[in-house]
Length: 356
Image 1 (cartoon, helix red, strand yellow):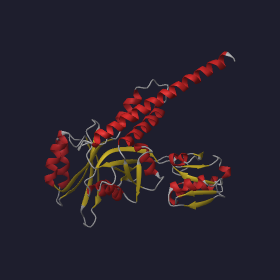
Image 2 (tube, helix red, strand yellow; image 1 turned 30 degrees about the horizontal axis):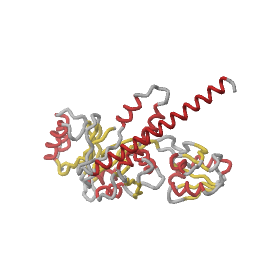
Image 3 (cartoon, rainbow, N blue to C red; image 1 turned 30 degrees about the vertical axis):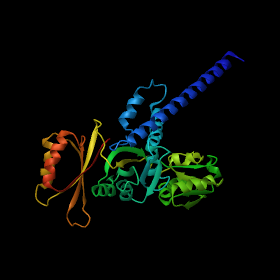
Image 4 (tube, helix red, strand yellow; image 1 turned 180 degrees about the horizontal axis):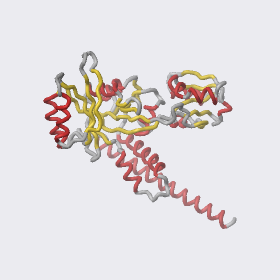
């Protein structure tokens, strides 16, 4: 054996030992997470802590730089999500189809061990939380083209549930099959929306393939996994989980796009220091009413980051305003501003505080 080969074998042996140490550390973390869950369940006011961006960034910043930050984020986010699921029997409702964008986003935060419930609307997902059938709901909050998700805002305004966290994911679609080779594809399974999003790719790269409409991305992947001549279009996690090989990445006609999600809980989030607060309100129909409301924030130095309006259902010429301000709902300037704003509004509800 040459010196270099011997050195490679020694390094592989060292890597194997490190893998064992990592496994033991993960087992220790899992045991501690279970203990946290046991203690929290005995506390009537216990609240599950959703790992936030600041916590993740703080850990990643400690790295030496040898491991790319992007890889560290993926690794630690999965560790957080998996251990969070061990703290409790987490049930997470989401607005979307099984295996779709919302399902993938929820799994990225709460791990593969949690139980997921697909819902047909944001209102139904949030209702699962208010009825205590789910611990959290994940719903669309904002898109680049359409702004705040009106269905989500309306559902929150009619509910006691609160936004407790917010995060952004890319809306990427990929195609995969059993071999990772497009030449083997005669059929493509996809939901109609995803097939439409990838129309250019399908007509140029797989013009002779039959595109078959299915009811969910999860079913598309299941069918492709059982069919050697088929492929599926879905998110990467959904495809890889069933053992399919990616044949082409990012096949959406529109290229990369992003969506902001909101995690909804039954209790408000705690202050993190870099928070934003969402508010829904309706003002009286008189000149200067909205200006008077907004002045209460300005006078106390509260920065408004967004204001939008939408018609109130069933009430002609009446509008519900969605306002986002910088700070947490428990920050004194916001508390004082809201005290006076309530007196000026027909309706006001704090939708929640979260990091952005």
